[in-house]
Image 1 (spheres, rainbow, N blue to C red):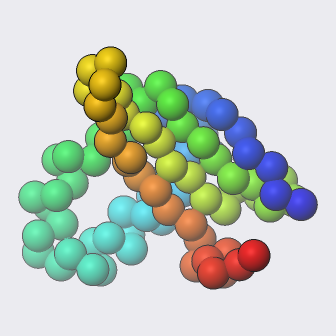
Image 2 (image 1 turned 120 degrees about the vertical axis):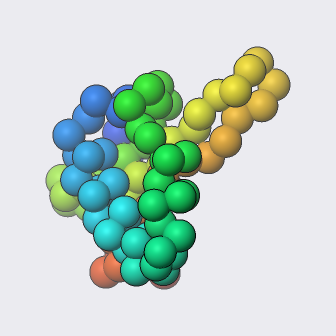
Length: 86
């Protein structure tokens, strides 16, 4: 069963998923990863969603508001074994 948890950047489940996301991005980005990493801080995200499958965190995403009319989707990630599932 999949459940969704609304949380913020202080959630330890987010930290674990972000670590895995950063590892994957480092493989894709290669030497450019250091440059892109500066834009990916999560220390002040107020609107985070974590998907859990049978209590195990398997996906995450966040919304970072810029002002009252615009926002950016941040740190969207799904564990490899849970991608492309119904």
